[in-house]
Length: 185
Image 1 (cartoon, one colour):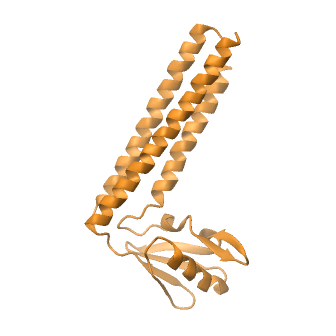
Image 2 (tube, rainbow, N blue to C red):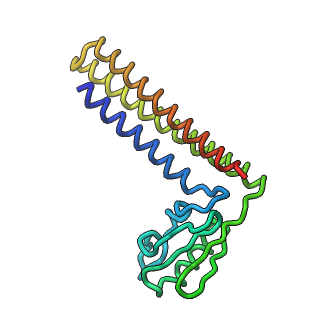
Image 3 (cartoon, rainbow, N blue to C red):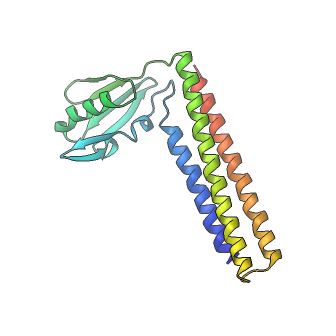
């Protein structure tokens, strides 16, 4: 019973960390990364579709992304979606391929992005602590219902705290890595 709570708690904490990593991947740095376009939805026959399902995205140079649509008819809608997004990048099209030149970030924009990274890190920490709270509540409920002893509950609490410490450290490392990447010129 305690193992079920621990497994569920760990899975949810892993999910929070994975979500943070996905979030951080979409934050623009000075380098071109196909992950910048991961959340971009394109109107395709009336249905919002992720760009990576409609085109091949590559980074042939450090400051250049290329998008090669599978269906050339989607070229215009991809351009419109990029212009409408908050990326701040203007697409250049030659009829078959879209090129996105990634401009270097200003110092002010770098510091803004660091604040965004820190906010996302704090949100992830809160999510992990909420998972811990839920796990501890489950253990207390089991003890109240006499399904586990007080010693088992205390051991479970220690294990949940160990999980929290581990995933908090992982969140901190991810955040430091991304901050360093954003501030790198």
